[in-house]
Amino acid sequence: MSKNLIEITNLKKEYLNGDVRISVLEKVNLNIMSGKLIALVGPSGSGKSTLLHLLALLDKPTSGSIKSFGVDVQKLTNAGKNKMIRENISIIFQNNNLLSDFTALENVAIPLIIRNENYKSSIEKASEILNKVNLKHRFEHFPSDLSGGEQQRVAIARAISMKPKLILADEPTGNLDTENSSLISDILFNYVKEEGSSLIIVTHDLKLANKAK
Ligand code: ADP
Image (cartoon, rainbow, N blue to C red):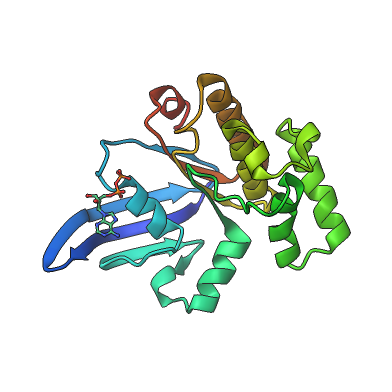
C-alpha cells in the first residue's frame, strides 16, 4: 500500500533581497505518496525550483513544515539532513554537475565509494548502470568529451546508482533534443517503476509531464 513519503503543511518561502521581501511559496499543502511520478509544471518564476530545493533539504522554509520519510526535516541536525539525503534522495539538475576531472565511470562510482561501498563493487555497479543507460562505450571519457545527452545520462546513472527512494529532477531534459529527452525520461520512469521510488520532475515539456500521474 502507498504511504506518504512527503507531507508538506502550510509551507511558506520568502526571499529577502535587500529590503525587498519576495514571496515565492504561500500556503502550500501537498502529500506525496511513495511510488509516484509527479510533474511540477508552471510559468518561469512560479517557484518550482524553490520547492524542489526545499524538498532536497538544500534550503529552509520561512514557515510551515516538511515531513520526509516520516521525519520533520526542520528538526534534523545538519548531520541528520546529510544522512537522509545520502540514504534516500537524489537530485538531478539541468546542468548535470558532473566532476570534470573524472571519467564517466568514476563520476558514477565516487558517490558509492563515499557511501562506504568497497572500490571493486562500486566500479562494478557503476559499469552495470552505465551499460543500462547505453554508455558502455563511454566509460573512460571525461565529461567534456561527451555530448549534452550523454553527460545527462551519466548524471542520471549517478543518481540511480544510489538507489534513492526519491528522485528530484529540475528540468533534466531542458537542454536536450527530442531523442535524448525521451531516452532520459524513459530511464527515469523505468527506474521509478522497477524500484517503487518516487520521482518529482520539474519540466516545461508537456509531453513528459503528461506521462506523470
Ligand atoms: P521556477 O523554478 O518556477 O522558474 P524559482 O523557484 O527559480 O522559479 O524562482 C521563484 C522566484 O523566486 C523568482 O522570482 C526568483 O527570482 C526568486 N528567487 C529564487 N531564488 C532566489 C534567491 N536565492 N534570492 C532571491 N530571490 C530568489
